Image (cartoon, rainbow, N blue to C red; front, side, top):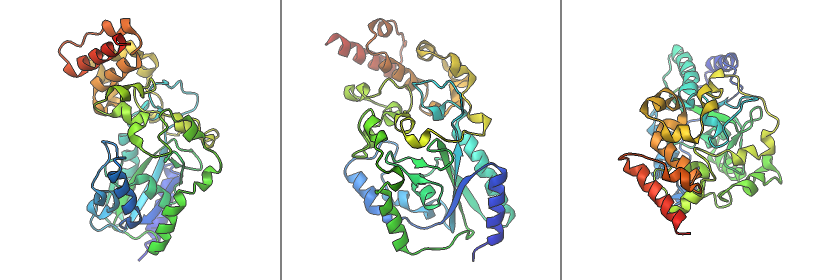
Length: 338
């Protein structure tokens, strides 16, 4: 039975936390996505970070056995008048979103538990399709670039989910979800705009093969020579598709000060990153979500960014770090063979 009192209480809590984009959807297997994910696996269109077991992508009961409702929230991260570094994605220049969004989710979970229910929150910590869940929950729509767009903040948002054993919304027939999934491909909210597709550096948005996405490549542990050429001079992530989107031109900005650009980034240049030691990394970059792959991946991407600068490459000294030396030698060999 629908717990109206708790639902109303949650709505009041969201407003008190300045969470304006939230929603509820029944906890159910996403049968309508099964063939879609199977196709991605078959065509090798999954990145190395994506789960290949389709059941883990569509079955929330694997993560919370007695789930009745999934709650979705969106937290904005873009701040106004910030001097963001152009070679690091904006989302990772403030405090690591895992900690910030989890802070909000934890407060919501504590509120639910006060009513005697159980729940579990997730922030990029499961394999479920969080953008699709947000879409079903009414948090926003999915654009041609596959990002979730909210009315107030555009696509500059982080998503989080809570699965709980309380009923907070009405069930709908399977046909409803099949139709909702089909409607995504119509991109009604995008209209006739194809700006993201036209501006994507590696043309990934037609086939939706995100193996070629700049953001994916900057985080990929190993890159071949062709992939190195496609980093578009980025050190981590990519914002091209959303920065070029008209829907992101007139938006409200983030309210949480923790997402403001970290002070140390305002003075960071390529030389600082390439020469940073463990102490500098832990005191500075460890605060950011781009730290999850470690400092050597950031150094590698700086090398690739400067691959045309022979003097820069030749001066680099990585002692006995084979991972970095191998990339340095590859870049130098490629340069000398031209």
